[in-house]
Image 1: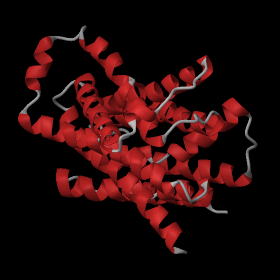
Image 2: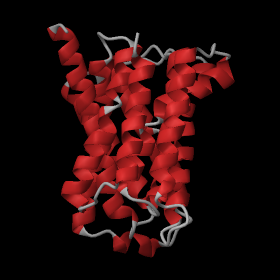
Image 3: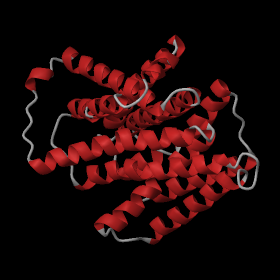
Length: 293
């Protein structure tokens, strides 16, 4: 493995670590804060962070939008899909389940993207894809096995919501593949975050103003970290995928559940059951099989 490939994989691993950090920190907030409040603060700070980077690089005045109507539709669809839609459903699910399960289920994204490509764009199903999907399903069953029939049956609902959240997130990656937008990556990251902010502020107008009083100084600190992490994820991801193919990019996602499990244990004190561990191994195996050339 050459130095360029190692460097690219390092950026991608950092991107996946950002996802793990956000899942774990969000779990510590979602039990007492409204998901819309969390998303509004998060996307606001992510947008401010990216705007400051654009200003620092003197890039703001140089950008021109040469978009047709379809380009704007794709940009808004990607922003809302990977932004409001994914995060609202995921945070709603995270309220009922633990960060470990959320991280493990979120790592099923490559399998969901495969299914979306097949259903929406008639991509040919290969034996490798079929095997990857089947192993992913087995891993998902094992992750949920302990919650089925137990007193904590709401965890099944939470896990289901997190899995459903992967559909709008998967659409982002599917649209990125079939409808790539010709724009600077830094500006793209800013736009993907900023488009969600006015949408969320409109929703907040219909929520009780008292919800803001529940946000403590500690919560603000965590949300600022989550917001900055959101911007860093896209930066690290864009740096990582420059010099590698889709197979290695998919392989890097296998690091995310491992990072989430370790962080959930350190920060939240969450343990890892045998079922979840076996489920994690199967999910990671499915990613490796899919990424194998």
